[in-house]
Length: 362
Image 1: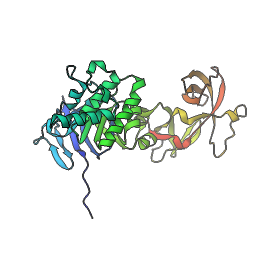
Image 2: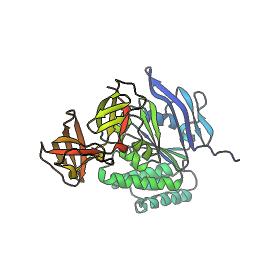
Image 3: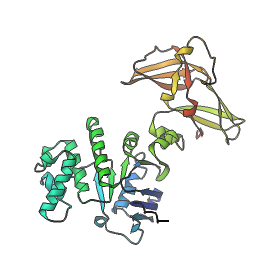
Image 4: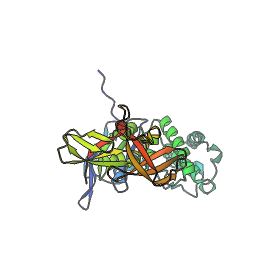
């Protein structure tokens, strides 16, 4: 039996406190070569501090950091930041305005001038910027400057790339294109990537694995599909999309709702639960309109609501309903244009297999 190859980057039980508050609280991560992991969470949850500790510009209170199995940092021993073979890429491109594109990319390289020029040309070719090799940053667009910043970070062949909100300064038109180009280059280089973002769409688009962070802790970690479809709690579900919340009280491990009874195993009688469902999983039952509730085993129990508001959102319409059962407000999305008048009664159905039941925090 062969020994397991250690991760390219591994952080173990990192903690960092400021003013008595744990900003990073027992965070552990492992990233393989060529893997992109997104550290996802709201502003102030500890993402950037974690990145700074890995980069070596911040010191942890406890825990260790390893690269390819070798210790690079604990609370006593520290490899200097410039010797960690870690690339850094931030929202601020920080290109040197007085240097050409070639000299910007070659800034951290060692070797002969010919070797450096060849490496620069190779990287610029990958991002379709070789024709700008002798241009200056002010002659480039924002997206082109972003590509130069990327290849400059990759030029020394770092084993690990740390990226802190690197695309947030780009307009929406460019963002997807730059993200895809960046991801392709990083994968080709076999670089282990830790990307910090507060945007779920960006994490879902780029990550092989997402670590969802809240109040200094990683609350859930796994493939994007798993985090989206099996959230650990109501907050995790809400972080990835809009949600509807149906509240109910448990009686005999069952909760009564407008859509029938839901199982709530392990929840004591009298406790409240939140049944979470996303708008796209609430459907308008157009076949049932005017016939009243006559559920089939496949459909479950329908519930009636009155249209409160309808808005066209571009690719779909968002319709809000005031439910007869408990006067609660539910939102659903309908493909294309569907704008019923306020007060219109419609029957709704829900995807029970897409519902999540959590103990209520209210």
